Length: 170
Image (cartoon, rainbow, N blue to C red):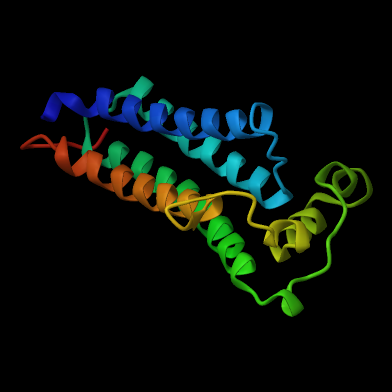
């Protein structure tokens, strides 16, 4: 199992690619238009995937570097989980408490500084509260939240499962 570090990291990257591919399929073939929070979740998924990929390409032998990659990947997954969790929370609000619909992300990016765009998107709006699709009673952001939690746990597990008896720091 100790020589499986690189393949396991590639598997994590592949899982992120599959998640992004599914999101693109829903957008381009099923006609589901992503809200700004969905787009931010995609960015977090891409960032987590890139961390997995970098870890796989580097393939450090020592536990220190592996732990750094795990921590960075968990941070990306945690950011995605935070956004997805906020999205799920917005979807659970009663109709009279849902914020008003806001402008598109393209418009926000054109007229606001990035910090304000981030704040506006993370507050959410009525577009984000709409449940366009669900499977097994769980909305798409709910499944995304589950995926981010799974990716974070997996990122922590890989260096533990592939630990060598006398790991040294790289």
